[in-house]
Amino acid sequence: MKTSIKNQKQNNTVNNGVVKKAGIFTLSIAVMFYMVLAFSLLASCSKDDSPTIETEAILPTLALVTGIEGTYNGVIGSPTNGTLNYSIKAETPEIFKEIVVNKIVDGVETHHESFNIDYPGFVPNSTSYTYNLNYVLSSGNANSEISFKAIVIDEAGNTATLSFASAIVKEPLISKYMLLKVENPVVGAVNTPYFMSINNGVLKTETVANVFNNGVDEHIFAVLSYNDGSGLYISAPNTTLETQLLTEFNIRQITKFKEQAIGTSGFNDYNIYDVYEMSDLYEAAEFNSHEEKADALDTGKVFSFLTNNGKIGLIHIREVEFVSGEFYVDVDVLIQQ
Image (tube, rainbow, N blue to C red; front, side, top):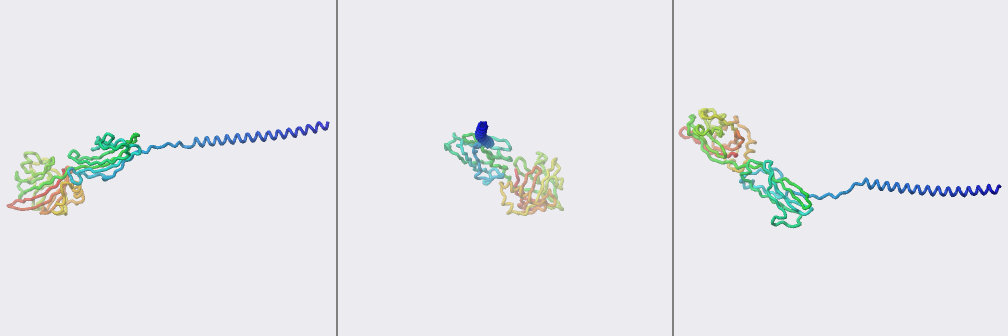
C-alpha cells in the first residue's frame, strides 16, 4: 500500500514536470506569435503612414535677357525711343515645341507671331530658344499702352508665360515758329495774329476774323496782348484783360504758364521727341504770380504751359520788336499732340 502511494507521488511529480514544460513551451510560442504580430502591425503602420513620392514635372521657363523690366517711354519715330528691342530665352527640360507671342494694346490681346517646328531654321530636338522682339512703334500705337506676352510649350504640353516690353506710346511734339502782333494801345484789328491755336495736330496763329468766320475760339490756347500795368504778355483767353480782342469768343479756354530759367540755349536742347521731358519740366517749375499769364515778355524768355485739354508745351520768345506802334513777337513753340 505504501509502495502504491509512493509510486503515485512519483507519477504526479513526473506529470507535473511534463505539464510545466508544456506550459513553458506554449507560453514561448504565444510570446513569439504576439511579437511577430506586433512587428507586422508596426511594419504595416509604417508602410501606410509613409507619403507617396510622386515625381513632379520640371516645367519650362522664360526669362528676360535684354530690355528694361519697367515701363518704356515710347515715342513714335524717335531714333532712341521709337523701337521696342527685347530678347527673351525659353528653356524646356522636355523637347521645345513652340513659342507664341501675343501683343496687348489697351488691354486687348491679339496674336503677334509664333515660332515652331514649321518655322525656317528650327533646330530639331532643341530644348531652348531665344526670341528677339524688334517692334517699331507706329501711328497706330499713338496714345496707347502696349505690351507683349510670350507662351512657351514643350512636347509634353507643359507651358510657361512671361509678360514683357510694356510701353506707353506718344506721338512726337509739334514744333513751329510763329509771328504774333499786338498794337499799343490794343485795337482788336480783325486781321492781326493775336492768337495761337492747336487742332488735330495743326499749330498756327489765328485772327479775330478767323474766330468770327470759322469758330476757332475753342482751339485757341494763348493770346498776345498789352497794357500799361502788365506790359507785354501772353495769357489764356480766360484771363486776357483786353476784352476787345475777345468779342467773337463763345469759349474762353484756360491755359496755365510757368516761367523756366533755361533761356534760349536750354530751349534749343529740346527736340520733338522729348515728350516725357516736356512734362517733367512743367511739373518741376513754379507758377508765376498769375497762373494764367506769361508776363514781362522779353527776348530769350521761356515758358512752360498746360492747355485746358492737357497738352504741355514750351514757348520760347525768340525776339521782341516795337515798330510803328505795334509789338512784333517771334516765338518758337513745342507742344504735345
